[in-house]
Length: 306
Ligand code: ASP
Image (cartoon, rainbow, N blue to C red):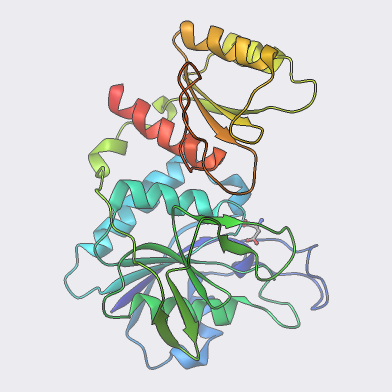
């Protein structure tokens, strides 16, 4: 049995006309409707549950908490071999990373999405959903992955790389986990493993979760944003530095002041891929995590200390 959890997104979006690929409204169709659009899934043992219904640009901590609990409940059922989550593409990599760190499941948890609404002339959602179900039912598959446009990405590496192109997700730092060809899953990399933080780690009411913001280095970065954020009350800051996490002198100064004032600071990079290498005397590196994933990591770290 595979359980499909719906959260909204463009995959569940509708437009007034079939030729409209951008002026649509996300999160309109229920997960049962998405399944009904894929007759090839008729023979599969599936169950569907609507966990949320939102445009993933509006993803929030409360939905993450609810989703993590819902996924774990399904994984705990012996008859469930895998879970599929339909999601928007905008924050899909964040949800995937969050679930990976919190649940690190031994069964496959497969996120999928679409770049075109369900009403498009050639929607990509039905194929992606079909592929995601195949991945969730593949013996040996495990961990939180993203099945999209014929490729399976792990939660750590996956990033949305294009604002419009249908094949938007990439594993930015190495090989993909698998490819899906005509419904058959060909493993070419490694299925994710890891240690679960567990649901207890994220059990605090979400209005008490740490506030972590992202600031970017750029020409003329003067640290004023950091000071304004500190004045508004923050717990952590991720600096999306240039190159190897480099920061202007003024931004570095403001971030060090913040750190000295008790704000946790890590350095990531605004580059599309690659790690930030630690150097003595510099603010701590976020490793190979993108700024949005470094933010999640910092939130989870601060939750442990709360
Ligand atoms: N804004 C949409 C969402 O993330 C975009 C998409 O799904 O492609 O829900």
